[in-house]
Image (cartoon, rainbow, N blue to C red; front, side, top):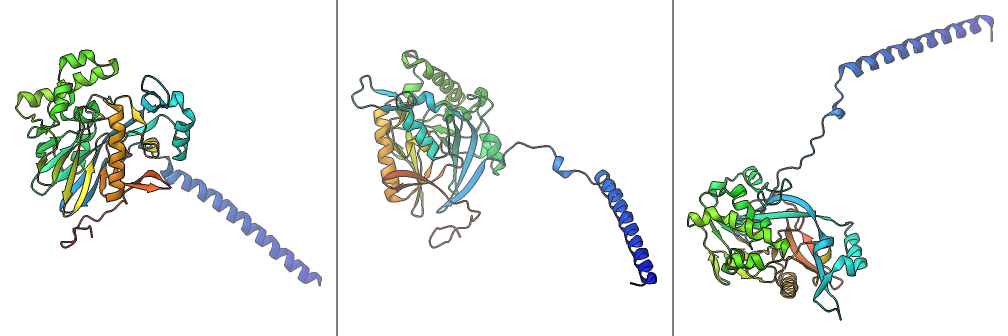
Length: 360
């Protein structure tokens, strides 16, 4: 290479290096400017709140709205029981006497105890009436729950629009929402439940004879029902009967003396709002013999569960479950000889085909 060409190449390299240095300086300055001028959106405060707790589906001509009252740690290790062959004295605590089964069933659903328990209620709009089935815990379970009214409002309805409240039974997490703090939440509604539950839970002698863990239930029932009894708007019913067109009471007396499910039917489609047939789905579907110590008659509750599981799996109707993860709408299925829970598909389709009654 000639001396002249070598000199020109050196000059070109020097100019290029100078330009690169200048570009790096400009980039550094710009980056610093942008860091100061552009807000750090990723540093926004965490909201730590869920979306409003309501979900809708159509059942024939009826609109069903699932309403969440709240979730709480369910004390599975303390309350789940199972009959043991050869054991005297009835049922034994599942986690004490068969922890391998209990923990294996939870692990199969990637869960550990305590499980998160949903408290669900279901609003039925028949087109002429608004019927609420169960009401949540109100103020009886503390801050975890008592959100049904706000979720009802978020769903587009108001408490004063409710015509009737049908209670599956009179445990605190089903009755407490009708009168949080002893004040009627549904000023125009008639409250209905099985007369058998009313006779049992409103009786002072039964409260005195009950186990200690059940006694607060009696007081919660009396406080919740008091404003409706005073207004003449508590109307218990007897036995299995049609409560109104499209809604029928179905007796399932194992969990409480008057525990009742409600069969909701429209255009050939059926939803059974079954109350407390299930408390811990991960355990009681594969092993429906597992009961809870809150059951008034654990043997009867086991028989009820097995019968309903079999019928629901065979007939394929919808289930509205109080204590399966919100929204608690789905079906009972069978896989490899065991019952399973099949959650309903999430859908935004609210129109109904006028011929088939199916969503479209």
